[in-house]
Image 1: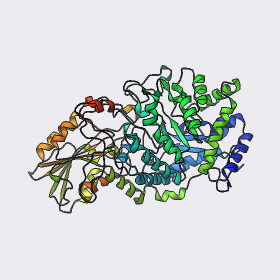
Image 2 (image 1 turned 60 degrees about the vertical axis):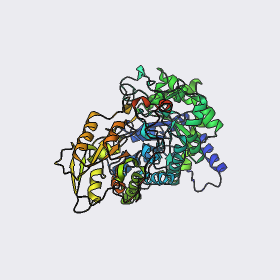
Image 3 (image 1 turned 180 degrees about the horizontal axis):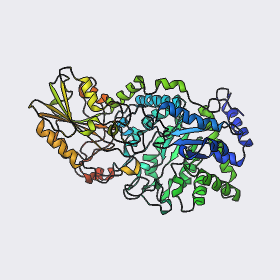
Image 4 (image 1 turned 180 degrees about the vertical axis):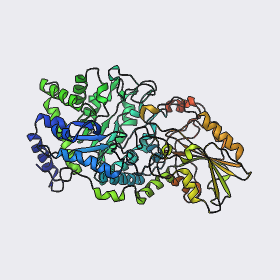
Length: 597
């Protein structure tokens, strides 16, 4: 049976077509649609045999070679396998393209969301989503596990950079812009992580002894990620839920559930929030997907995990490895009556409706003609604009910035000045990111070298070793090593000794000193501010770091505004403690100096 979105005369007819298809499906075909498997764990033949509804690439789930062309072939193989099934129900392929199609070498990597929050520019965010969609569709991918609409309340959280801001009012319009950009381009957004993943308490992450041996097991490093939000429902509704409702009203048809808990109950077992609030109270008509193996954290019994999650309202389960065990377990639960067949039918109807709305029944593949635009100059120009608008200027004594392009000599120090991996952060090529030339792009150093005058010398030393002249201007770039999720949970956010020493060394070397900090969150910099004549927060800008030199040298003005209240000391963390501290913030939410073009 073939369903055509373009030929649908009405929503009623479209729903009737989905119901007709559902009536033909066996239980095995229905449960297959509810199953999402990681691409390295399944063959194309098993996609056909088990009627699999979705395949995904996790962070680093790349083909060899890791090129856009190889991605397109890899994904197409799975899509074609789904069309070999009896009913030819199309498969939807998903990836974490959280700041561009960031698993793929040569893709355009945009600033992470914390930087985009500093832009306050929903139109820009929509255009970023549209560019990302083109690069996804070029590789036959129709489902993006983004945007994260977290409202982070503790900057020690390893996912802090995935959120736009601590403020619901800032996050909501940017999330809506991103959702519209994907939908306008034919890509399904996954709004995540439902809900209050940014509101968990430090030290509340738990260990799950029955998950030993699995890389997703919270352990060393996991202190707040996947933790417990110890907040009342009024706070949940006022702070954390609004972006989801706004995204739904903008057309979002997929929600991803958080690893975290609310009031001690795992979100994947929260029937009240998933079914009663999201689906019934709000009228959400899309489908709800689990996160990576997250249902396994509900209970030591996998059978209980599956029954609890499906009955709570989960429609598709990201297994992602042992899909045969999941299929067998859910089949048993239905046959025993522990999961009603009506719940299965509701889940599958939602999945089919979304696939129909995305247009997969009519065109199950992407658009490989877009491969010619993959990583194009046009796409990179949007990322460069995003970098420019995301920069926040904290200090600018005596209007040192913008710098003159015709200064005789600049001294550039710091490994991060010439390190694309550091400037991209986590979720870039691999889950945890990497250091060095991990993908195509421009470093801060090359951006400076390209913009200055022909007679201007730019000398670089990662260690800050220079023969200095009294007229020299120094530029120090410091940066966090890449991290993702709970691996980035950090209690102490003071700068490491090597960064402090580099700043101190350059202060003694140079007449004027500019410090640029690459980071996925605010760091404690109170003492280092005194050492700098100008201090720039560049967040995690991605591959197009020329955008920094564009602003540093005055082709464009500084306009970015803090999306987080900035702490003075470690004692000012989390946000609740900062709000109660008698000394107040080092910089308030919304702070950011401006310069003339």
